[in-house]
Image 1 (cartoon, one colour):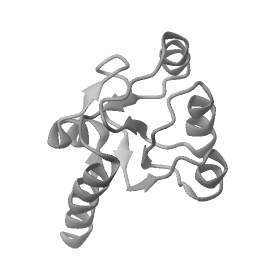
Image 2 (tube, one colour):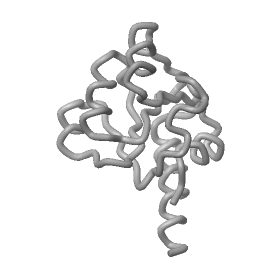
Image 3 (cartoon, one colour):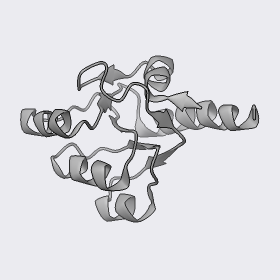
Image 4 (spheres, rainbow, N blue to C red):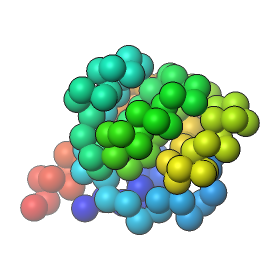
Length: 118
């Protein structure tokens, strides 16, 4: 199973929260959505969540759904209050200069390849 650390490395993600936070968490699959109610209804524990949303509510949704981490595309980052809340709640936040489409495709290739090897 892939870990958050390996996905961070393989996709060249930038950590916005401290480097060790959630590094060993297993990533089972991914979810891509900007609608928080959709994420709450459909994201599963162990997913890595790709979203354009960068406000504090993403931390609460990440905790509720038990996702492995949250990735912002297009170089987006969160404000200081959101970063502080994420650190306090131990929700890994990451960023990439790639688009959500590119990230989702690369993530799918990594995770599907891992499933095929079993």
